[in-house]
Length: 166
DNA sequence: ATTTACAATATGA
DNA sequence: TCATATTGTAAAT
Image (cartoon, rainbow, N blue to C red):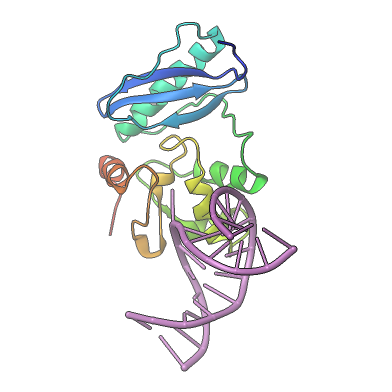
């Protein structure tokens, strides 16, 4: 066993199951939904830095699941993905709790009003659902659209935030 | 390198 | 309602 990639995996227990956060040496690299069964491999050899980030992530995640403001986040390692995608994720993080946006709005916000389709793609490639609130992004006229990991989650999250769906 | 599909939207018929 | 053009990415060929 060698450690080529320095990814630290830590689990987060929530009322909705056990999420798994992954940290690189740059910050939060991904967040996974509960996988159903199988406990997440909690890394006991986590570097102190990762533990600090993990605490922020845990708090932010629970707050978001409870329908509160997401709050403070650790640095996100969005080094994967293109500049375009980073712009999209950044724009999405500005959406306040209980508020919904649309793919068109995001596209416009990053200066490419016609790239709505591309925005959808970037959302699908988003490694950090919930904290980057892709669930708050609806299609035009507030249709639900899709969601990676299941529409079920999207509806649940929106219901908790009491987002206005009409 | 070209085609196709995506979590879209607007426009034209 | 359906066909099409558009814009960025990824996957398939």
